[in-house]
Amino acid sequence: MIALQLYTVRERTAQDFIGTLRQLADMGYRTLEFAGYGDTPVTELRSAMEEFGLRAISAHVPFIQLENSPQQMIEDLHTLGCKHAVVPGIPEERRSTVEQVRGLADTFNGLGQTCHDEGLHFGYHNHAHEFEPLDGSTMFELIAENTDPALVNLELDLFWAQYGGTDPIGLMRKYAGRMPLLHCKDMLDDTEHSDAPVGAGILPYQDYLRLGSEIGVEWYIVEQDHPRNAMEDVRTSLRNLEGLTQAAK
Image 1: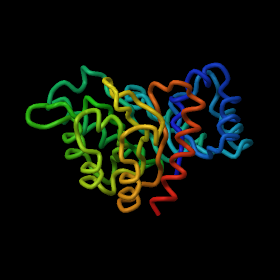
Image 2: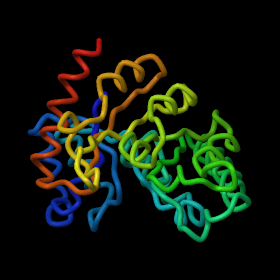
Image 3: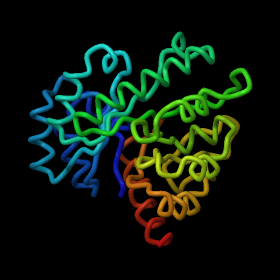
Image 4: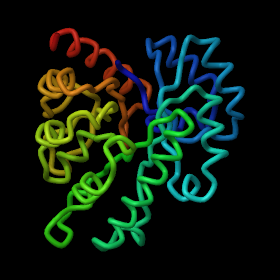
């Protein structure tokens, strides 16, 4: 139920990927979402995960690479044991107009079919810009409404949805069944609304977890873009999410 997006500890994995995996396992994590593999072959990562009692459920994959050469990326996901391929962002020049975003949705449907044929689930991860006005709609709405729910999931980042001025609870309800993965970090009540470990800020995680159990959320994935101390922050998020999960039952 609780996983870690490895982007959060990117400075550690850049120095020692295998050693960082061991530390995360010792901390209590059992499930991972990748965001690149550094210079470590995926076969070595898979062996290390098996040794440390870890598994990967998902990976963030660059859109351009998945669009241009999907087979290699799919093979890597199979090697790691991932079930989800998630695009974490789109170049600005591909998402500036309604027509571009609708074309993007068509591309997502095609990639979703390719992943489906390979036994994988395809999804898209938001930041804040997806909720900016776009000719009477938003990029998020256009993608959600123009993609096939059977082929394209929505990996909702709760922090970025709130930061972008929308209501994460409303989105969870509206797109129930399309959000097996949620990204979890908290928001500080400061002038910049900085990100923070889960449970250390103002977001209503108890409400998110209760609703998540109703709409089919399978994994709550810890992530911080700007951790103060990456290893301590992910430890805090894990412990707090474990407590909140128990309380939400």
